[in-house]
View 1 (cartoon, rainbow, N blue to C red):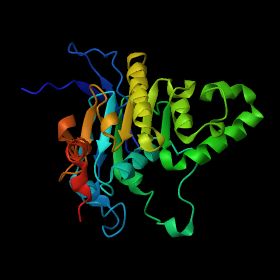
View 2: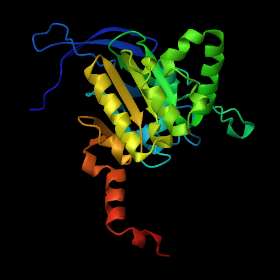
View 3: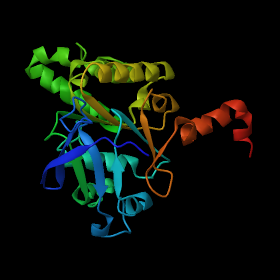
Length: 271
């Protein structure tokens, strides 16, 4: 018989449920999982011929549950993992530092509307949160420079120096090692591996491990990195199936691809 951690619903407001995790005896548990589940209300989508509402898996998946402090979203490009992560962030009130897509060619009026059609089942109201998008990091670092210019004392919260004075990869790692990344709360990260070398991806996973052990933190990470997917005891959710599905590390597409690639790399470049 499959074990399920008992929870009880405390309140439901504006599409956000608050749940309390219980121990086996029925009393509140010390374990914190800020986000327990996501419900997707595809039947309410305004249309199905435009992104993100035309993403198949968002139409077939009704609920996604979270059971580990670190959860990985993985799947091929265009499968909806970043779209869903963005919707969760917006529902939590976590707008990405550095802003979104601004060019007129990117102005899809529906692109940011998925948040209206999901419900979040949270254990606590509006937990401290942080939404990181690799593609907006330069603007994020520049925004920090403006803040530090007005309040130099804040520099220590983000590694002790301007992130723009470091290489791209060094600045990513400096942020992940900074004070603001160690507070208890919900962290949503979209492709943190973008500027990290393989060695620094390992360091990033070690940071996750340390932060999870030393507090109440929950990470949801969209990634295609087989190194980050290997984070010990992480829950891996695949967006490559009919519905969002839990899989093992060895079943993940990045792991299987790199395993085959390193076996006979030359075969991948034969016309």
